[in-house]
Amino acid sequence: MVKHYKRLYMIDYTNEGFILPIEKDGVKGYASVNAMLALEEDGLDLTGNYFVYLLHPTIGSTDFILEPTSGKVRPWIRKGGDIRLDSETVQQISDSIEMRKIKTSV
Image (cartoon, helix red, strand yellow):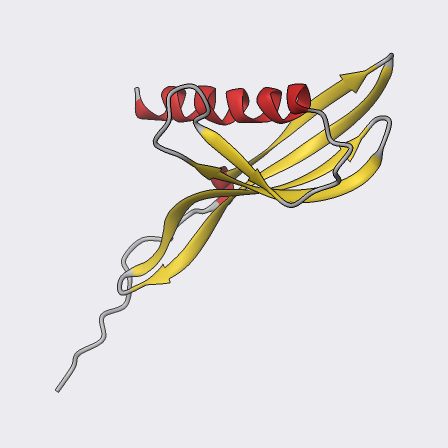
């Protein structure tokens, strides 16, 4: 017989996403960066991937996934998104993810 226990505390996933301002040629947009989670035995767990909705100031709306790699030169790979999306913007988003990871691990 399996016993189910009520959780004694509320799990808070609200800190798994953030908004990052993006500016190009004097026009502001933003990236909504969200950690991707998957169902595990004891609840949700981080996959390591990030879903990004980007309102790019010059090309418009697009979305893509950032997946971590084991490489030091290119630690993230972008999957999907508008083909006109510049690598500088993607790098700015991945740098922000890395900075947040460093801050939360301290």
